[in-house]
Image (spheres, rainbow, N blue to C red):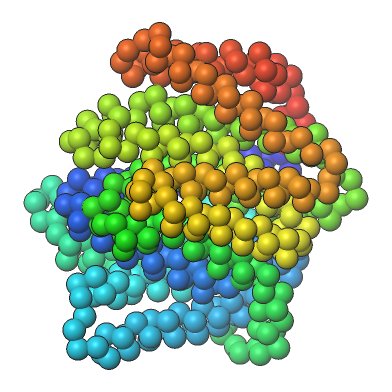
Length: 470
């Protein structure tokens, strides 16, 4: 079990690093090669499409992982889920096409939405194969499935940028080509590596049962999809594409900074599902995991803020660094909360507490939307970041109140102390030194000292971690 966990974490980590580096390359070329207006429009289109396709999953994707990890026949689940994505995906894109032919005058943004939507539809069709591979814990296969689109996009964009042919038209061409290639490769790899029969057979009763079981999670997906990109869409339509370009740049770097969370999150669902099927819950191991996640999360925030403005302004020719200093600081405060919320969500999901999870996301969504509506018109991007921070904090408080494992009642403390250590380290290093290399180095040293002083980092952690992996 120890070697398997380390192996899976390593594969998932490598895949995420590769994907995030490719994504960063894509984002960098687009942000520096296109003007802010076109860059903002592309991000607005992607925000809308990603939110819609996430909603169309109905939450079945997470349920598929859980069912397969529990031993349900993967062939039956694959067939039902594949039927679902084909029906919902084709219906949605059919409505987009209908709108294109229905109206006499279609603006440039709608055309952009329609074209990029072709690629996102292909990615949506590939989802069932990826989720089955995840449920079977075939993370190496999943890694291959997940990188092809970004490889094509990154290589294509760099080529066009190097030859001075980067344009909105060529960007769309590259995006669609990469997404189609990913679907084809996913099907090929799945048929080659997994013995699960690839059949498409209508199973009405099974489909209805799956929809019923996923109904609470459907509400969660609906809320989280809107929550994840409501601020982008609101800024794009209510403020300007230029401000969205600035906010989306900061938010993209913020998303990339959650790489460790992205690496461990897919591993927790099958692991927690199996653990909570047992009578004895290893609470000590859970506490160690939370503390480790909080140390990483707070360190990430410290790193981001220590070198943000000089580094980002240098690589973007002054377009996205200084102007986003306050935005990235507010977003970085969300990192420990995101780690803690994901940890608690996974526990509740493994326990099947879907209605409670739905309630938490409804409350979080209302807080975030209210904050966006009230703050963005006055504070623009900083208002959106603060609204997101408020929503994350409210969700954390709600999850902690709904906890039924008494030994985990105080797992918020590592998040508080690690964040406090990072804030003190960042302020002290800026008071002592100038120049981001010295600020970053001294900040890290002070952070480590404070972690030991507050017992968030202990010499015994290595032994306990070895026991956790066994």
